[in-house]
Length: 76
Image 1 (cartoon, one colour):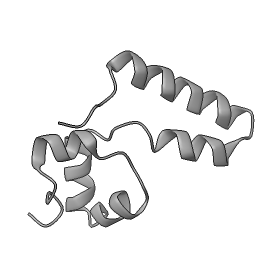
Image 2 (tube, helix red, strand yellow):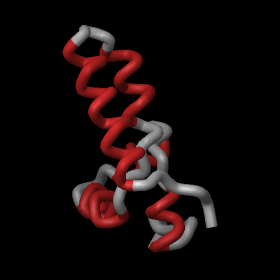
Image 3 (cartoon, helix red, strand yellow):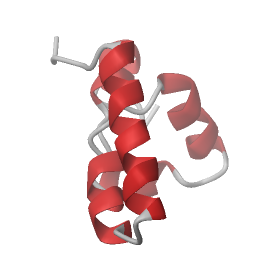
């Protein structure tokens, strides 16, 4: 199973994303936010709305989704 982040690591990363956005460093924030694993329930919701491909193509961290739903989650 792929390594994922602890809740504390996720919180710290998202707090840093907020700080970067407040500082006007949106490009850096965009890169950092994509390192935080997407929860499977969010990926499923985006998939149902037709945006599952966006997550995959956009470079979002899918380790938790793939661990829970399988690597072929988007095709299911």
